Each structure stands twice: as C-alpha cells, then as structure tokens.
Image (cartoon, rainbow, N blue to C red):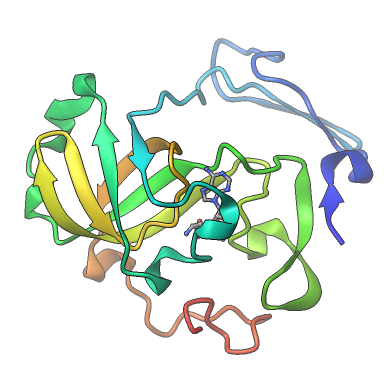
Length: 186
Ligand SMILES: C[S@@+](CC[C@H](N)C(=O)[O-])C[C@H]1O[C@@H](n2cnc3c(N)ncnc32)[C@H](O)[C@@H]1O
C-alpha cells in the first residue's frame, strides 16, 4: 500500500505561487498547504556516475556494497572542493530524480507494515533527496571516487559535506519500527 498526496487530498501548491518578499513563507488552510519555494531552489553542483543504471541495480543502502562511484563536480564549483581531499569520509546529498514525489506512506523492503515516508529512507517522498555517508577513495581534480553511494547513474548531485564522527555519529540511535532497530543491519 502506498499513500499518495492525491489520495490524501492534501494540496501542495507549486513553486512560487505564494511569494511574500521572496522569503520562504507558509499559508495554511484546512487540508491545504501553500508554500513559496522562491528561496528554495537548487542547482545541481554535479552529477553521479555509477554502475547502477536502474533502481533494481542499486543497493538499498550504499554501505552494503563496496562499489566505487564517481562524483563529477561541475567546473564552476571546483573552488568549493578545496581541502575536500583531506576528508576521509563525506556526506553526499543527491536528487532522486526518478522518485515518486506524491508518496506519503509506503511499505519498505523490511516488512508488510506501512510507514510514513519520513520514517523511512524510501526514494519516493515529497522532496526526494538521498543522503549517503561515503568513503573518499581519491580526488582527481573535479572528480571524486567514492565508496558506499547508492545513487543511480546520472543522479544530480546537490551537495557534499565532510562527515564528522564527532558531529554525526550516534551509535545508540534506533529506528523503533525496524525489527533490528537499525536500518544498517542486513
Ligand atoms: C533506499 S534509497 C536510500 C538513499 C540514501 N542512502 C538515503 O538514505 O537517503 C536507495 C535506493 O534509491 C534508489 N535510487 C537511487 N538513485 C535514485 C534516483 N536518482 N531516483 C530514484 N531512485 C533512486 C535506488 O533504488 C536505491 O536502491
């Protein structure tokens, strides 16, 4: 069972329909949300090159496979890569361009129960942004070879940040609905 925006009769108005001085703003009515996205547009900073042509080819989480993918950062953004090569691990944010943006609730590969997409890592969600912690294998100019990415070939690259164990690691974190309490366990 997959619940979609239309099924829920929740309307999200399009980009730029409600503009209050160009700032992100909300106007809520009963069962209706109007959101200005004027300040919320993203330009891809690059593109993913991976061996995963189709969804079925990709691991559910990149951490489950050691394949090496390449992040090609577009030339205008090369200055932003300064010192990236000093980072052992990176957080990669990519646009899941082949995701279904109308999905609000879905089943997961872990069982028959239905969950809200915000409690899952489904690529089908209102803002389909994939996040992966990857190992940086090598930097060669604007090309970053990385392990543990689950992005399909051609996925637009949105952002790159250093992974910091001190900031990001929460070893005691749990996902309560999952039978093992941890999506990372196979
Ligand atoms: C379960 S998601 C997890 C993504 C990311 N690690 C996260 O937690 O946000 C990974 C799956 O998304 C799918 N996927 C990868 N790139 C995609 C894209 N560009 N559009 C739609 N689906 C994509 C693949 O089927 C892959 O197995």
